[in-house]
Image (cartoon, rainbow, N blue to C red; front, side, top):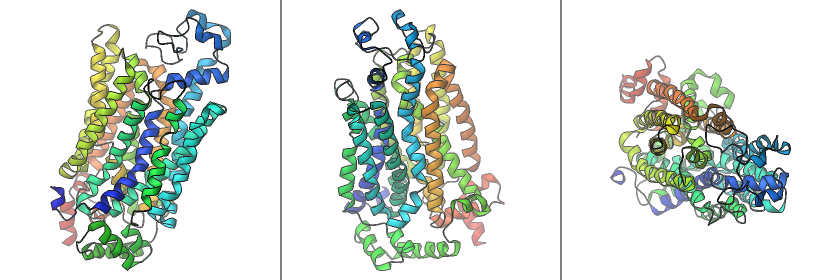
Length: 528
């Protein structure tokens, strides 16, 4: 077992990692929560904005379940932007689908704008306050954002939700940088990959819980949806109190602050009774390395040839995570299932959440066995095939009703392959690719890149889906092919390697790309 190697789990390590990844739980909850109650919230927006006159709800404009048809959710083949009932095509509604689509897209994607803005300050706040205190302080943002959404019915709800999503995004942007930084620094090398994948497990658990709570007989109804949106504030409160029990990162104490005794004490708490000296020696080596390379600014990161290869890899793994199309599924899966002809799309969406969670657990065990690079490649190729199958299913749906099953299976496979590689790996590989000097800047840049791509997908997918109809996933398939080829030639294996060994890969830029992959060869040639 992994524990048999030089890293073993202790109670303090488990508590510290669990507490940190609660930040990612909130990130997942915020990703998924907006999906299930889409129709209820849009109907509420319509009333607030005066788009749908109140008496409409009593007329034939409502569907069998009493909900008002929502612009942009018609099956492909009907005209986008028109409402189902003939009574609804009156002139006063001419602009409404576009207004509603705009407010809805903003409600979905403002979350990512917050993340984009705050991800740049991760390195600064993490170094200034320390990892633990920084995570403590940023929880204030989470609680504020969740309160704004929870109270949405007491004001202009569309504005409060958009503001609440933006503030929650600010929290998640900081958290998505601070958490991997802390977890990678407190984990023993042998467990770094497995504990690194727990970020992803926390995300998918958050998505799943938000989807279950979003069922209309629980919180996804007209009375309870503000509570549903604001509920991840509970996780923020829990994290706040648990952080008071967590030790500071020994690497931060030793390398940044030079507090040797405190670092040893922290290590002993995290590692139990094993001798901390081997890790202290590794930190000393990294500290000397950091002293010689100094703190690297974001500008230097891009201008220095020393980091160029690593930066390109770091950015591309983030871009491939977001542009793989996975967020299109998380944000809009209920809508996609509806279009694929599924009777109960909300339950299919929850099915995606369950599959998602199960395979994330599996990837926790896989990542130390199979290595980062091979899982990343396998995941991208599987998603590519699934995206093509999904397209075929959606295109032929009008001719063969059983094609809806093809689309459904393809969506499930798409999610499974995402969790095998492109889901968890980008979050921690960036922290692994860089040593102490450039790491904060690299995490900030990678985080910004991830959030910017997240925003683009969240904002544009609904429009692109209306434009491309069933062919929308062809775009993602083409992108996945590009990402696969890039990863094949450029992404190195980081499994079980120290930060020093990983840095050595990129130092040897004169090696052909394929030779970069074999770290062992490089280490041999370095010694020579």
